[in-house]
Image 1 (tube, rainbow, N blue to C red):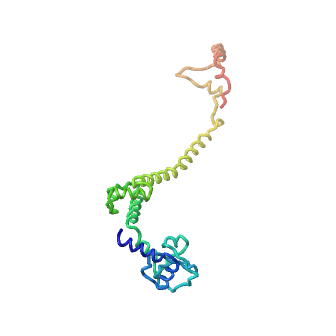
Image 2: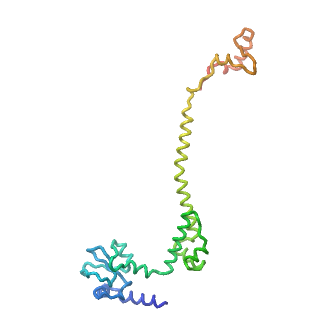
Image 3: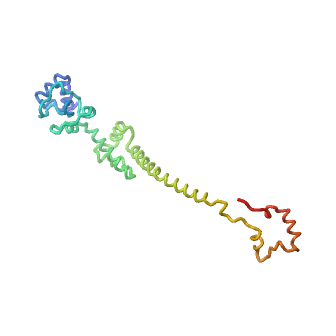
Length: 230
């Protein structure tokens, strides 16, 4: 175990109960920084144990093991001692590298690109296989899988935004087609049949010499002699 982790473990053990933490706040003990933070109920602010601000009453003070826990409870970071910066400095370096890797994957995927594992490992400073193993453990999927999921989500969103326009266009075409009603079509009349000619032949069904032929055709094709309806 590294000396840094040993010191951190010892520090958290020393300031593990409320009385020890209150004593550290009163003395503004710099060794307590990073072991816990305290929040003031009346101001809604949380501070480092060594904050130089005026000390609040003990009854108005709450202790939290970390700044994120105090923030989650609704308290704001003190602008004087800046406890959130201390939390960032104490972050596990490996977690910071994975967060950087996630940012790079999302940045490339937002442009429809996939960053290679080799390129990603060089930019975050980890070997390819170590990066893949830790990335999958923390994020639940590999960088390649994350890229694919983001790109597919973006494409699905684009397709979904175009679908209503295509549906509207189809509805407009159907409406135009339905607007062509039967009452706008001119049915053929006897006069139109009488005046038509086919390849120069005269279809004069009203002449006496064609009366017999006309009767035969009327029996064979009655639909040609009836009225035309839609």
